[in-house]
Amino acid sequence: MDKLLEPIKRFLQCDTPDAWISKAVKKENLPMLLTDHLICELKAGQTAMWLIKKYAADKQSGQALQEWFQPFEKYIYRKEGNLASLSKHSKLRKTIVPKSNSLFGQDFIDKMVLLIKEELHHFYQVLEIMQSLGIEYENITASRYAKGMMQHLRTHEPAILVDKLICGAYIEARSCERFAKLAPYLDEDLSKFYVSLLRSEARHFEDYLSLAQQVAGEDISQRITYFGEIEADLISSFDSDFKFHSGHPITA
Image (cartoon, rainbow, N blue to C red):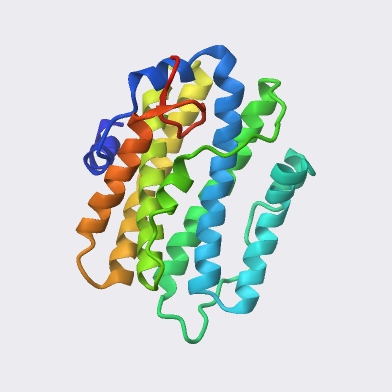
């Protein structure tokens, strides 16, 4: 686990505050933690899906991607479906074809599709855990975290895509850092699950950075540092909300 965390820790500009860990491991906060984690897995997949659809895939492929997500989105937004119905839609049944005028090749699509497959599988696993613990899914508000980074995106292409990919890298890296931070304090089954997520998702941030570099075609280190500072402030500053990616809790 330390080997997996080494590049993640070098990338992130701060550690998760101990106060957040103290609050997250309290039994009464587990439903919120898992519920937000469930939603984060879906949002991570959605982000990759929309990137493929907008920048890389042809129209039919984009439609196939949206159809892949519909059962998961219906569960989150309308509370329609269950584990059995979601399991039937766990696989993409169409090859994603690049649009003829796309500047982004098959590598972009392959990386993002693999990420989506993993995120949706993890969504299913988190939901499975919640149901085994008797935690009913309830709609919750989004945290300030992703929005706090996305509001600093540049507004022209390809810069906006580069910035989105860099933000994606930070979100993925922070998730992995928190999986590792939480694992020692959770019960055995949940601890093993979070360690398995770390192993599965540890490379995601590097995939995002690699794609950002390909799109930019120039040095992006200043943008990486810029968003790293924003991300670190969101994580280390006081936050009245408690979510999987929230900042320093006002009360631990």
